[in-house]
Amino acid sequence: MRRPRATALRLPAALLLALVTVTAPALAGSRAIPIPSDPRDAMLHPFTGSPATARPLPRQNIPQHPFMARNEENNLHNDAYQSDTYNRPGPLGRNLKVTSTAFLADCGSVTFDRAGRIITVCVGITGATLRVLDPTTLATLASYNLPARKNPLSFSFQNFSGGGYFYLDNADRAVVPTFNGHILTLRYDGAKLVKVRDIDVSGVARGSGIQSALPDWAGRLWFVTVSGKVGMITTAGVVRSVALPAGETIANSFAMDESGGVFIVSTHALYRFDVTRGRPSVTWRRTYDNGSRIKPGQVSQGSGTTPTLIGSASSKGGGSIAITDNADPRMNVLVFRRGKAGPGPALCKQPIFGADKGSDENSLVSVPGGLIAENNYGYTGPLPKNVTTRSPDTEPGLVKVAVDYRNGGCHIAWNNTTIRIPTLVSKASLATGLLYAYTHPSAAELPWKGLPLANALAPESWFLTAVDLRTGRQVWSRLVGTNLGYNNNYAPVTLGRDGAAYVGTLGGLVRIADTR
Image (cartoon, rainbow, N blue to C red; front, side, top):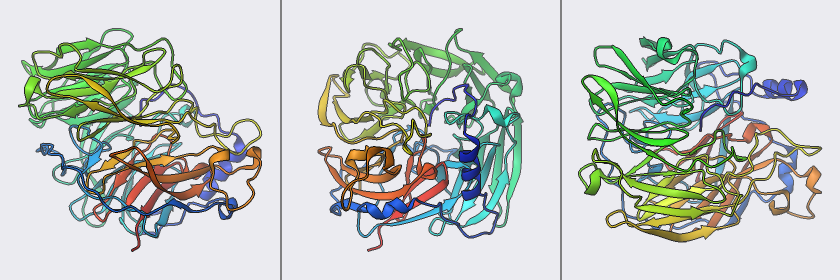
């Protein structure tokens, strides 16, 4: 999920009506109503490949943030380091069952409270709703309508401010930025969601969307706006802020570490912020090559990645930090030191993907020995093009960059040149040794049971796909559903405690789980 671009909603009236009809919002206490799928699903093999045997990789040891719910369950990117990696297992591909719940909203960020219930924010055309869901049935246990958009016609498929990013704190409370420039804290009391705190930061945001809000290790709440404001709310509730240089906007969430560092990437530079004399201040700033254009698949001219932290703050150079740039003709994975002394020379600058055909609008995945990047080049939104019912094909590409974090240097470890991942925040499971992606094969690549349909008649089909973390080889792929309602549109994969995978989609939320 990435920064909003100021483009208004342009949905054909008939398509909008159909979407509203099939995804009427569920009421609190109601059972899940599945997202409808296309009858052409019957023409496709629902599963290809073979179930995997778990081949665990070494566990990661990311410090537990004292003011957030437990790691792997507290925000879109799993933890304060934004690793996008789990120690827990995901599905192995054994008789996979797909369950869904239909809302007129994309339930992108999925977190879990101590009881294992899903806490999610579902962002739609008119506004956003905080929901509590049963993790197995996806039934709605409670819901809370967040402040609505001032102008629903400002809706964009690339706009996730107002709750697209939120986090669950150490008391199981959801901390959510809203469309009206507030940051709300809400708790579930077993029957309903109750607002317990309301902080007005509209004087800092000044109408710009609040991209993300997260706490530092001392409990101060930080937030960033699309317009390039970096704000901090002290433990006493005082709001302090600083503006980035003119022309810089913020297109992603941010990361924090135990040294007090707050790490933010703008459309021009990578920053470390710390608190100086009670105010947010820039400790260092490192520019990167932001290219010459907004590439298809991007929502801004700059890095599409939330910063990823690797190694503890007590390790060499204060640990490492990784992003991608937007260089032409080939983008790069970049790794630097992140300590207060400054980033120094790049530890890694590795070109990835083909010339003029690479863009990554999702966070890097930190795995043992390196980082995984996906190619999102070509995604222009979920709506069909020309006379087909399909959104445009994107460029294939998934790559692992091996990094020597101690001494510097990097190289391509493996390169999958066939898998197509339009917009997903892919996730890794170290327990299974698999990466989970949400894929959209071209019409010619669909797993037809018999004679394929002509490209113009092929369905808009989406698959959960498992990739071997050691080799980059596709292991299996499971059809999830077909039509606009199954497009994830920048939402991530999330792994639950029972090994199920969840994906937020334009139709609501889907669950994919082994049944044996």
